[in-house]
Length: 567
Image (cartoon, rainbow, N blue to C red; front, side, top):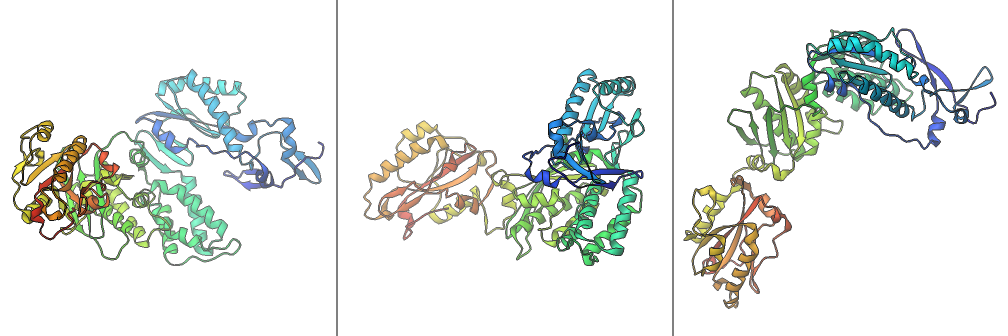
């Protein structure tokens, strides 16, 4: 051919079964290419989500997948290489171009859509050149010859030797053995032996930056089978950050201990991990059995454990002193999981943890982090195997703080924690007993003496009034209070007839609420010496209809020397 526009190096890398793969080093093309594609491959998650218990499985492998896609002649000059002084160019999609996986997967999905329309009883998972089929045995037996013929007519070449054409309930896909009868997943034996040899080599000779990245990739892949697999990688990940590219460095300390732990587990046949557990961890399970809500403050840890058909378990305990609040949030999760294991010995259920700390949620779901305190790794390495032994799968979900009020309250000590009842009690103690209850809270089991309209119409005489004011009535109450205050000389605010103290209660569960929650949203009125009652502290947050405002009306003569009242 004529000289190509762009010439790039070409070389081979070893594959399995004593084969080699030709690699075209297209970094120079990638640097100037505008093809920056992001997409999602349908891998093992999709496969497990589509396989039903007891399904039968078949598998197809395409021969030299990328090479089945042609490149138009005008673009081939960008794919040049030289061998023995002679110029050549790829006529097919090469390994090495950054957009090749995107285009190849897109073509495979188009072909898969045709197959799915022709054979509606067959579920298909496509990962580049690996195709997995699942369904009933008789349907697959009849469909596979027709599927092969259809794909061949499309121009695809199938590697029959590497394919599984006879339906089975256990097959290898993407380096894992999927067992639909046992609903389990385990590491393929060839992968286990390859990873074991690399761990042994690392222990004996050390690692370079490149070999560490390759080993971490291998072990991260294998960690799917072990509940604490990723947690066992964290020390090695930290050590790899200090490695230099060309220099081999021996591994010591926690990183070496982690490698030894991986060597021990890889020396034994791969365990089988429940696909149901994995789907729950990925948020793909439709069943929710046990829920946990946790929270932490600088003074305590708290949480609630809810099991269908049983009474909720509440816990509150002191927090370790001097630790960061994010670590305390994680300790609250750990405390809840410890109680789950203590109180539910039967095990074998799915558990979802709701927490308002995104970092703590990520630490649990990702089994730690290289940026997390080392104690997090220690907790996870001890906790995760015990959960696995009891067949408890755990997934954490971030939940906004205002949805986690009860756990928040449980995490606070008596000095910090308050409640509607306690605030009212303290107010009565300071200003005397309440004389009239206009709109009573359901919390006290009382019935309303009058409707909101009647409450506004009647004359408010001197006395101590207590009322639960619906949000929609706040403006009207403010107007009436303002009129009452305006009739009173303001030369001395302590002689005003009325004062207002706002409290907050959750209309669904008017129980404990922390003082921090009250004050940080400024849900209170202030009394100023020059203009009576000032409502400027109310914020739009109160527009949430799930909250009610609770007002106390008391004579200001009782305030003595106080010039400001707030909760």
